Length: 408
Ligand SMILES: CC(C)(COP(=O)(O)OP(=O)(O)OC[C@H]1O[C@@H](n2cnc3c(N)ncnc32)[C@H](O)[C@@H]1OP(=O)(O)O)[C@@H](O)C(=O)NCCC(=O)NCCS
Image (cartoon, rainbow, N blue to C red; front, side, top):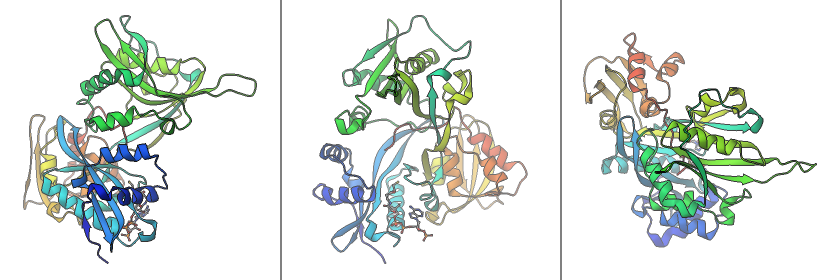
């Protein structure tokens, strides 16, 4: 069955957000709903209608996102939900196809999203593009290796997050271009980051902030909450939930980590971090990271040629790719990718392919993470010319590892 699909108007917000609340088993506080509404681009919403009932929804944030070597307009897919009464009838599939066609028409070459479940989006050509490490570091395992960076000019200051908002924004802006996956935050996203009503705290207390600064400027910040817990005999057993930690240089970064790890009355720090966060190098005993690993951003190349010619490459490469793409058929076929560390082009070709791969594999590698080599070893890509996958994987790889750091 086919369902008419169209954007919603502002006065349909209540039905639209009702589908989200039902799908996510979520009861938003009215203030949360208002915040969400304020950050909704209504002309980029889509609703699938069953008669006059909104049965499925999605939307897009128009982001500027860092990619290897630059920044691009990226469609940040959000607010995906189908009413429980209408599941498994193909509504999400219809929404996804329409959304991708709209994104292409608007001229964005790349779409990205956070998935509630990792099984959902591969079928629409999204690939797992960044990973995150969930850490649980006990205070007794938080010693740093000798030689970890430090700067005697730096000091930690305690600040009220809302009072230093402009400073936090400026630190974030200054590091934004370094790591693929980070995206520019508008005022609504900053409001969400700093939101601190009781329902935002989720039992973990007020949002707290420390700054790393020298006499000239602030060089980094950490945002966190602390669950104040006590053992049976009154021993302190607090749990610090690290929300954000950004710094302009390694010494400030190290000092901020030490500040949260050594906080009085705290027994452990929990955080989700990029896979190459320097904490993975600084801890003397890496076992105390207690790391578990998971998917973070999923990326879809909406226009393979525009996307591949709009990023930088780590090494020269010249390969013919045979791309399979059922959902965006304009991508399917052969593309010659020619790139060196200064420029790149991706053009249609009739030449014999060096590598055959699904479009999701390119999305997964686009931000410089993922591993085409591992996918090849796992039999998920077909190499026609010996060494072509290795050359492609090397050229696409990037440091630092991709990571968005804020669910949208
Ligand atoms: C995820 C969700 C949007 C799927 O909507 P839907 O309309 O039922 O999806 P479709 O009927 O179009 O499913 C398309 C395919 O995906 C599969 N699929 C969809 N959701 C799935 C899930 N959660 N787990 C496993 N498979 C899923 C379907 O089985 C179907 O497979 P097929 O093509 O092999 O038959 C819906 O279940 C939902 O609202 N979930 C709760 C909210 C949520 O998690 N949203 C996603 C936020 S990122």
